[in-house]
Length: 188
Image (cartoon, rainbow, N blue to C red; front, side, top):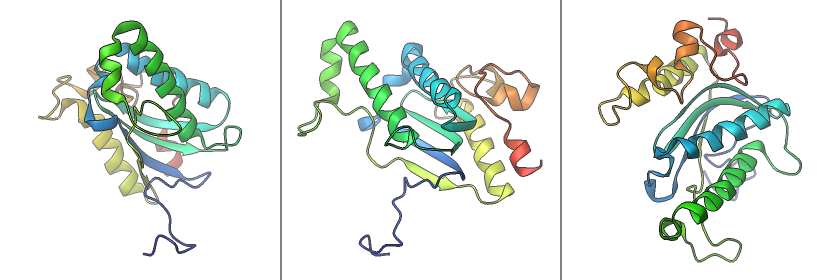
């Protein structure tokens, strides 16, 4: 499809009120999110946006260099979409943290751009509209199994990985107050 066509939608496009599987990746696939303090910045941002009624979060996993979520964008956060707010806020926080911890590490994210000195997130996150129950279920399983995959091995059981919502779906334990149940959306 022609990118100049009025019907063209970028791969990160999300319509208000729809449920999407969404992935955002740290620039150059660096392991910035390996440290829990950086993961907690993402959790805080999700909690804030949810509390303000901007998003519904149904599932997530925060990996060492990327995040996956199933969420719904309910309304703009001021003039911008909540996913832009999430990425912008976390980038500012990451920069502050790296200035305090390790200025040399901050240089790994330096860019030559007119509007910023550092870029923590890769451009054009991926958004996949979850228009059917089977697609939603497949993405939910993918998110939950990510930490136990052969590549990552961050946990032996998906429920043991703290930066995921798997334990809610498997055991009914709600670690994060801002999460909602995807099963209610699709009638599982």
